[in-house]
Image (spheres, one colour):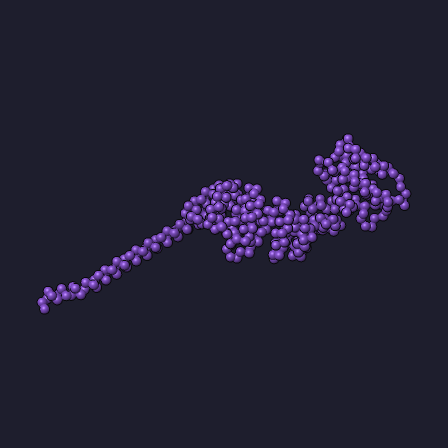
Length: 378
């Protein structure tokens, strides 16, 4: 065999090996390029994420300082980098809400809810927007969606805060039925904070449930015995039940713990006025009961005159005549009990007739009279 033939045969044998080697080199080159592209893409994403985080932090700082319009611009700038970032979007919505831009805030939250309809945070944001817009029915619905929506674990605290916000909203709406239902769910929660217990107690009062309110105020006092707010709340619960003696005792403690509270001081004074005016209070002698019954007539007559003016309508004029006669009568000690009962009934009738068409609100002097007559009329 000639040397040329040997070379040809070696070339033929090396051909497939060279081809494989070429493919390997091409593949390795492509893999290297892919790795480089991936690395560069990751670097770019990392840099963008870091930049978005920097902008987000600056936006939060501006919002905390109350510079909402500047914060809005920063949030929008951050979202142009980190598109569809739910945390940034909801933060933007909160600042828009604080700035009073309700329609813009709603647009942002709508976009989030389209992608994540069960998001607890997004539904809570929408509830707040609708609440500010005065859309009570839809706001309540979104609060419930937030409570039962998806939250980052652990979710118990977020759900609790959402329900607490819902009951505050219902209290403002005056919806006592739904408010009481939500409060009963909240009452089952473990509330180690005495301040929260007091807050819950006040909400039960707003819902028309002073008995449950008293339970929360007592629990608040068990947790923090020197809690002036809880003592004042317990006084309000007793007051609502017309147990004025107990209410006064609790208000006295609250005022001693917090002497600069004018509202509690006023409630304490009101309790004292009711107790001093009530002719049915236990332990009073016949003469004192009779004196108090006359005072009720005087105050009811004065109130009727304030409402009706100088010219009394016929029915009220007739009652006023009876009142004047009762006040001018002289009775013996043996007649005092019967006269007291008659005076109380007359004062109540005169009060009801005077208030029937009265356009004026109760003044401070009339409030104790209204409470006493409501009590004795039971």
